[in-house]
Image (cartoon, rainbow, N blue to C red; front, top):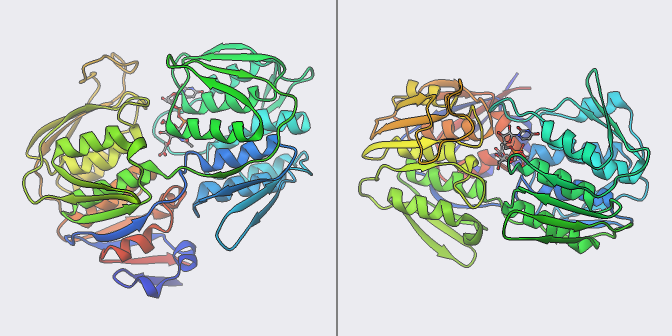
Length: 460
Ligand code: EPU
């Protein structure tokens, strides 16, 4: 059986309905998106703040929690480990770790979902119950996405890592001990692994080469509220003085700057205007500079940012993705769609993930002129140069986009396909759109509110 929702009619589909269906979107493009959307807590912070609650000996309250798949996965995993989770009418979560316990491997496996967050359960579970089993990880297929940094970090703390079929078993017979750790690359996840393991480890931990993304700083704020002693130095060094116990926290998650940047690109590509309520200038400065250089209009207000097409030509750009405070890799894919509309040749050098241009194949089928190269086409050679990774893109514009059929490849790539289809002349059919729910809350409701013309179908 097929259920169907039409765009242009926000009232026809409740959030719950939109969530329970979403296999194929049929998009009639060429309509400028116009209106207002709200972004809530960051996908790349909220699930981690939820995991941090395991470290406390009293309940924690997390506010501004979006209804996205990654939150669902972590809710299920925490519940399996005995954490009481209550959601109030406003959507705020109360997380009570008082009865934390070991879970069955098969149950963990069944709930791990398509997410990378389970690896961050290691430190908190070892502190709470002395052991952890981490199932094989999901997450977006944008490269190999190894976990070697995570496992090395855990070993530095004294953990014993045992690889088993279906996952990894981790224990620490003598408890976790503070360590001097240096990351070979400022990995977001490995930095969070250190934070979540070190706060209750015995002694001092010094991490050099740390990532310092705003979501990491917000996680540090959460841990400080719980009683942790953490300081960040300007040279990517983080010092943590371990404490034996932590309390709970009350925290409002920082807004999702990646979702905000995606809507900004959608406004530009469709020649529309979107006010993104909750978008925070402070955490988006690099994006805002780039958006302005490209020719996008923006107005920064107290409660959000208005992004719009100014009517003239867009200017091509040369940019490379980087760790914070550089241009974020998660902004790259939606922005590449905007670059297909710029007047001239743009170059994008992806230096965070080795394989994040796979989504350009569908854009080419929609009429975009994009070539991908193995060479580092940026000012600084990156660790993917002289290897077999197509990690630089040359984009010639402006291209007239036309509708096409495509399968959503990953979260950001999928959203980028959608905005290309929304701008394109003709009809596109997007299958596998559920992936987008991992990080974009109620995205079909939002698209409908912005005037997008689409049908949504899912086999019940
Ligand atoms: N890496 C390793 N070994 C490791 C860990 C990372 O080689 O053990 C490499 C990765 O393969 C990658 C680089 O280090 O080339 C950076 O990866 P990082 O660990 O920083 O990424 P992550 O923690 O897995 C988070 C976000 C990503 C975001 C990156 C970079 C979450 C859940 N995910 O991933 O978000 O792109 O940081 O900022 O926080 C997204 O939102 O679409 C998304 C992919």
